Length: 260
Image (cartoon, rainbow, N blue to C red; front, side, top):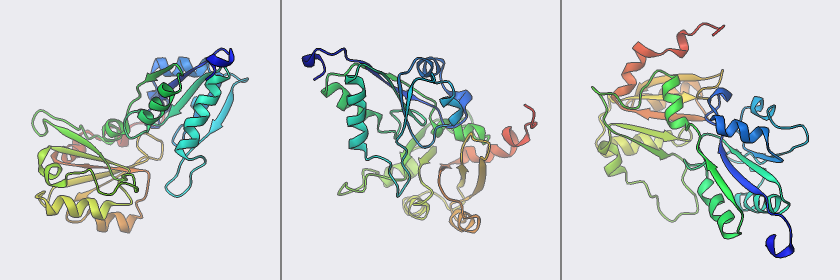
């Protein structure tokens, strides 16, 4: 432990960068970036945020793709502890929100167990932001009084899935699936098998809130075929439910002027 060595222990800030658009980071998160000694950042973080970091600060990329990890999660955990033990102000900059499928909870556990002071700064999750940018409200007084967020990519080491499709399929009005592009066929099959109607609308939002954002709309009956034809890959989220129909009316981003 750093205290036992007589060193001054720093602090780690688990900061949500938001879903992509750098303007969606919180004021607190931005101020911490501007004061950081070390920034350890993920793949889906806009580089314009890194321009806010002091020139003398150390930038460490630990991004993960589906088949390529710069560092394993266990190595990232150790890195956070080591940098804090050096007396540094460490910003762990994570896409979206640290505690929404961002493994921030695991990092917080390690920090707590190592006696490292830390703070969690929530971020705007893509589960809400990507649908909003696509003109899809996840709740609506006339169409949806509930929503659930699930992962489309569970821990492959788990013996069984923790997703109860029988309840999820019809238990909520709007179902949002993060990281679901690669497993879209399985997700759709489970929803149909457990009671969702084939005509239920579904939208896939790719690169949500980024300049390259694109949205594909279909139904549970045809979305797999549509996605295959468009080669619709990650990063994309799926939104299932009647609220998808509202996109025709309120798709504000698609109609925005280029100068806005």
